[in-house]
Length: 103
Image (cartoon, rainbow, N blue to C red; front, side, top):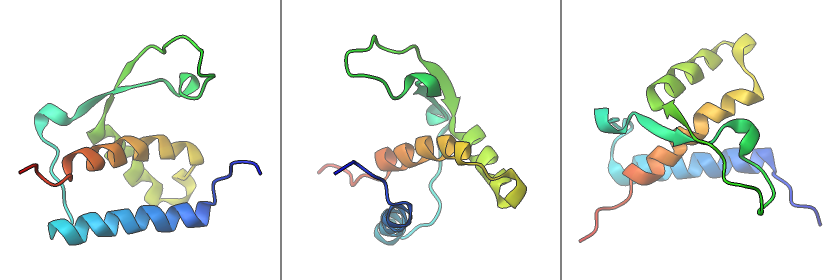
């Protein structure tokens, strides 16, 4: 069987994870500290390659820019699948900063 992505299932799964973060933290807003605004990013055309490909070059992305660009998708005319590239870094950031603190 081919590997597939069920978009309806993915939508529910990501929603479940965001619900978990909200419920477990008791907050629906996560602050981005000044020192965490920027992140390393692999250019889109180099992200999905054969395992033996040479390592890609890196760019710098901005979580603040990603949020602002995603906000434009409130307008139906601005929605494109490519806008998802701005959601991925935000989800990765949430995964890092919402982890329970080690005891």
